[in-house]
Length: 328
Image (cartoon, rainbow, N blue to C red; front, side, top):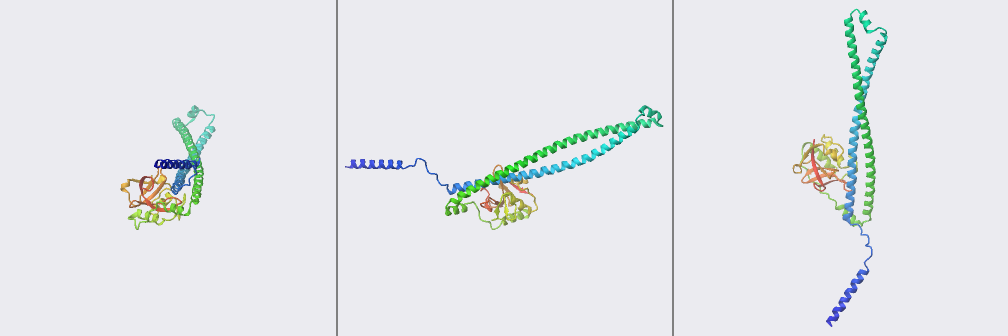
């Protein structure tokens, strides 16, 4: 009897297993994205947009430098033109004098001259003068050719930067589209999950005070006063910033001029080891560098993070840390 009950139980288990297999769908249903997946995707897209914006800042700095170089070249060209006009006038006068004396041979002029020695000295001086004119013209031609080559190179570079600017604009538009997608996806989540997502971002509480003095204190005071302001790509105040825009404006309060670019700011001061960080130092993230914040002590930074977070307080190592610089 016990043996029969075991056989019946085994049969029932087998039928249950078969039924379970029968009801397994041939193609698994598409799983809804988790709150973690959405957060990761949105953060990734925010950073892609920021990296593109920082590259655009670099391109604008390069273009400004190139335009300044070109202005200098044009000034050199104007000076060379004036010099050439002077040379042309001198050569023209020499030709006129030669034409006025045509028909009198050099030997004849020596014979009829009251002072043949003085005339020969004059002739020698004129020959040297003509050689000087030739030398000046040759020098000018050489310099003019060099200037033309430089100008063509500058124009070519300016064209490249214009193309890069257009490319970055297109890239930013693409990232914006992706951000809109991610936000739509976020909008499809339940209200409670959206709340969890927004509250899960790494934001640290505002410190009561930051120990700093001198210029660093002025920079920190400005940056801390912007906590809670919006993040806008390319902005540098008054009520919205991107990462390098915030640090640029903050250190401007201390009389230190920084470029509007995280990459350029990394080259705008003394490199500092993480163990030597002091409040006010600039800290940089990602490789290649595409984000900058300001150290405020106790393992914390203030930075313009992204459009979802704005200007915040965060941990020093909340992003992939690259290095630090002390401005001024």
